[in-house]
Image 1: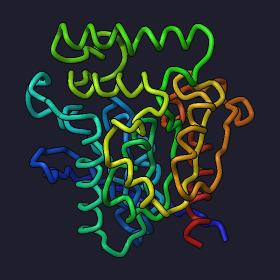
Image 2: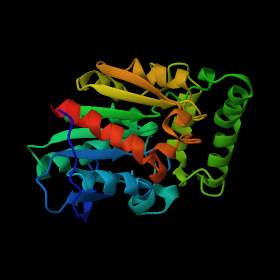
Image 3: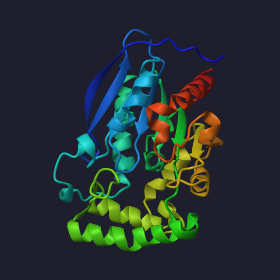
Length: 294
């Protein structure tokens, strides 16, 4: 039976986590105040996107009885705790270390709660690199794709080849970091991470290339059902690129292709699912999560 939510007040708490390799990251926990805790949702952000972007959807679910944890990857937002040029990490540590620290924190605070991963874009890629991914009970992937430029077509394919082969390496080497803020592309990214990501995006097998991170083996540990969502007007995660990533999850529940107009919305693109105007979609997602708990 589907759950009829009773709204409640929420409270927030800042969490400071230390990863297995000694880095610090900052998370925020949204908690329902007056109702018994249902499940815990943690939100894995897109590349260069601050956790504050996910505040509205976090408050939506917290008001319906869920604990929700958002966080910033190391070097991003509130987790930018030293000069960006001093970060020398690989991109993969966001999954191997940062997401692992988030999962461990949640399991320590709420050991009996079901754990739901809500991932956006690169967040779903990083989830599969965590050695603790087996503790996830249900995974929701929104616009989680391969970045390999060959999965695009036409002029977009050419532009992406130029981005990953020329533009990103040149700027990253010249400045010592990637100046995404100046380019209107989100938060700045460290040189080492951006160069590794660009390398993946030039490879047909993306991060699953034989020279990629060994931690891709952890994808096989994710036995939980994965509900994948792609959006028809999303130029950053077209359907073909999402379908590639879907094949990497051992237990894909289904892949839903959202057409914004069929839900009364003019457009969603890559980010619209997490904006306030998408609340009808959040209600559908809540029902899906409740069905998984039944």
